Image 1 (spheres, rainbow, N blue to C red):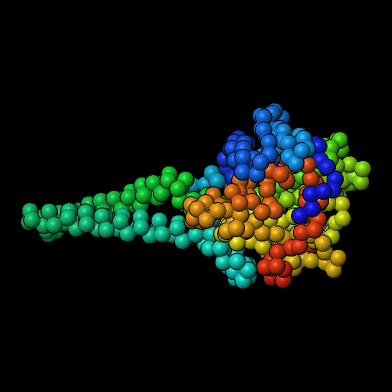
Image 2 (cartoon, rainbow, N blue to C red):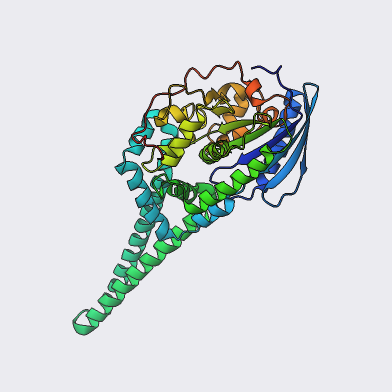
Length: 424
């Protein structure tokens, strides 16, 4: 890691979250608490102050690292409202989404090819399918057992009265049948609603909506998302036109593939100037193949190919095999099959959770899959060459920080995707 080149005193950071319905305030609080923890561990000073913006959720960061003072402005580019709207689905609609999404990934061969690379994210993708079907099965079994028992009990009670013949028996039989089925349906509805109400612990509905949103148009961005991305592009373009040393775009999880297209649009529109701030892109825990492998993801594949050859930006992709929710160490350009001969990005490196976290800390977090997926934004108690807070608030350009860094030797960089067509 090279930390002796261009010094940064002023940086703009734009954080693009993944598919997350939570208010952006939680990202500021996460940054504040984890930055303080990392500063204590690594021996530097850092402070966070709330700020205001009409178009983003913002805070400022003041840091003194390696004897240098740095001021950073961090903006979260918010699309949580779009996420919440996409999650506003009824229970039947969610099960219909399950069928459509599963069919898209299976019928196109995408699921099989994704499994060739990493089992973890594919298991994570299958989890909501299995969980939702399991919930439905449990509800059907309980409803069927209780409804059948009640139907039999009604018939048995009336059977003891001797009213077992003729029209009276037909009426009793109908009442028993209607009561049993009505109770069964009621139990199924109540149980499915109970499961959905407790999804903050199970995450089945959340993940199903996540994958369904990406697969809904077979890899194309929905119009409302394209419109929001255009507004993000305009916001970042303003920052690139101002004084500063670096404009750093952070794309976390599914926010990474949004960032790819936004940065490509910025460069194509001429917003990156040779005499302006350096443009840097940090993708964290990316799930790009979940979208780029789909048949209609031509826009994303074109943008991946375009960015991979640029010399007017820096792209570092950080992931970790310990994060089962991402395609760890999978070069998103190469595995998508759109790498060109002069490809130079991204630099794929590992956050190496098992080494950068102490044994005790790793043991504590190992099975907390969603928490591990956010570890890139958190403190490490045994940091190596990845420190989110030095990258976002430190005195070294991203390009210089990793100028001498070799890519991970265990990265996956062979073409895997069946679909490689680009946007005309």
